[in-house]
Image (cartoon, rainbow, N blue to C red; front, side, top):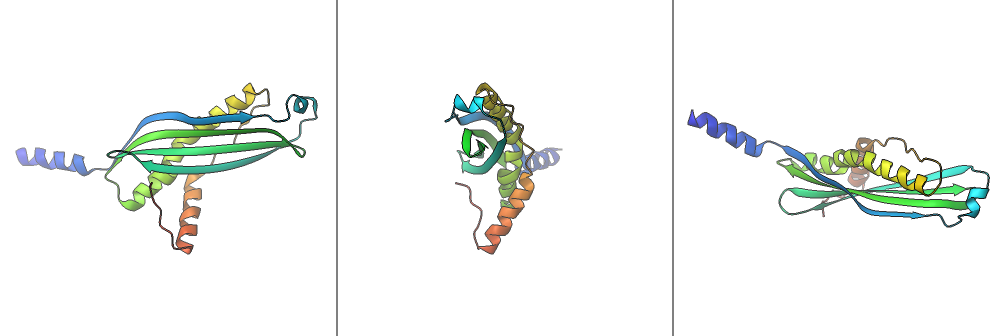
Length: 161
């Protein structure tokens, strides 16, 4: 009976673990350089989205993942507004092989953070008195696969800071 308990405890210690510890806004900015004149113009927006992720190893098996969304909206040739959010999370991740860890930090965690970042940006834009900004979902698995392909072609290896 003791051997079975020891085996079960040993399996629990080596089993993969993932736990979300905290989600928070790390940085937030909004700029409407042409206000109030921009509100008096015909509204024909062109939306540009830049997306970036980064990871940092913390103490033990904790990792910080930061998803940055930067939106620039132009009305004609003029910048109507620029909004940026750095949505971050702290994750406990244990007992994953290198490939699984890389995928978890590079795709799975950003998938968790994206809805929070999207909602924060939408709220920020509407508080600036602009129409709601509903960003389309992002396929982080596809972006991760593209990045892996690019890294393989240039002989880079994924790293966690």
